Image (cartoon, rainbow, N blue to C red):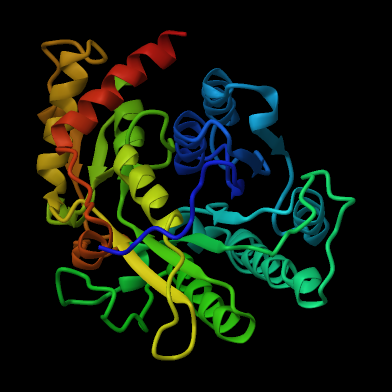
Length: 371
């Protein structure tokens, strides 16, 4: 296991995408676990999906914080250079977690501009701000005008950023290892995430930014994104509509519960990578459940838990509400995470059973929509 070299308690932490599914879960856990940390969030609160769910997540953060000083949110876009530069100059983050991104494989086919702006330009702005966070220290100066109140700011200690299992594209070797070549993306979304990894390596090599990329595998759980399959399936089933299961149900996904993802992110935040053989302080990890599930089995467990939670009636005819259809553009047959590196370096790997995770989602769904 690697030794921790960053104590998050007392640190200033910038989290982009702070009202997002993973971002809000991360902020909520950080303020509980590290009461002396200060967190600045950035989120553009766009309407890609129901903004009320984002507001709900922010309410949960507000319930968790010990004081108003512990968390602040900037409602802005990381593709706006002024927003990012102002956040860095005033807050002076020591740890940065970039989770802001335009998500969704299929949406990238319909609206590529959103992906270039958020995933490419936005991440570039974050990297540039991290780069210039070292300027004062290199010049032997201290900035006493910072609202952060730090007279000896030395710049960003660690940049952690979200990548995606989508980077593996049409890779036929399974499980997917971070050592595999990932040069064949099958969607623009995947291409932007691979580009993020390349950008981060270059900036780490050139400017000394310690950076770690995390390839998330099909995250699910309470208060998730409505465009994700399990959430969309639920919405359709309660309306009596038919759900479409692609590739005739022969796809397999490495479903990863959101609390496992959050735990993995926090573990990684505490260990800035050492210099690699290329002279860059750079690392990439998979975070997945290491247990792919067939989609037909997945939706069967989902409907069972929806019935058990009272979201669907006990006599619900599931067979009458599903349709098996061909593969859709941009999709892949299987995702399967090799988490050997994560386990060896941190003594941790995701482990929440699928049924337990879907049970938690079903309970949340009933309560949220009953409101």
